[in-house]
Image 1 (cartoon, helix red, strand yellow):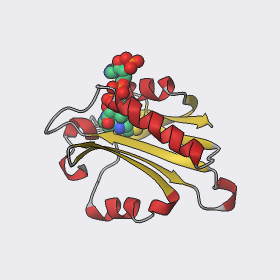
Image 2 (cartoon, rainbow, N blue to C red):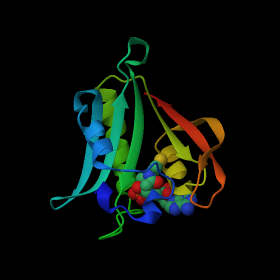
Image 3 (cartoon, rainbow, N blue to C red):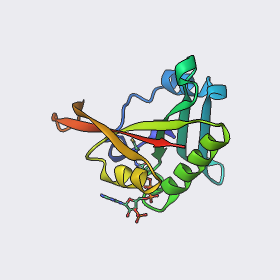
Length: 146
Ligand SMILES: CC(C)(COP(=O)(O)OP(=O)(O)OC[C@H]1O[C@@H](n2cnc3c(N)ncnc32)[C@H](O)[C@@H]1OP(=O)(O)O)[C@@H](O)C(=O)NCCC(=O)NCCS
């Protein structure tokens, strides 16, 4: 899925999605919540919550989510909302206390979705993300207490 992400999908994300990076994510599954969206046998969406391992952060998670858009547009159909709700439910089941994420402020659809499922804006990293447009963009730190 990551090998085929479109430029539009990657606009506000953090490439490269090379094999090494994907293997790093998927090799630590016991410390993560992983949800995938399938269309037949094809993965078209991925949500991951990486769970803290050091004692003070053992009940916290870091979330990211991507939906595919190339062979078919899976974005803006409610799939993100379904994955987010599933991820939050799974985090509660794992007794996490808190989940956080960072999103580029201009990624308005993502910010809207995160607020809709209960994440709150907690802070701004001013001009932290250098976009393809050559400009620095704010990032928003968002979190939810479970
Ligand atoms: C961000 C992403 C996960 C959202 O998932 P999705 O399935 O597209 O979102 P949904 O269809 O569940 O919900 C989208 C919501 O945003 C709203 N929306 C769409 N475009 C919007 C915009 N430009 N500004 C504000 N809201 C917008 C929709 O109306 C909908 O809200 P509603 O349910 O209240 O009507 C998905 O689009 C994606 O993977 N994008 C590319 C990768 C990415 O940016 N990942 C996040 C990195 S932090």
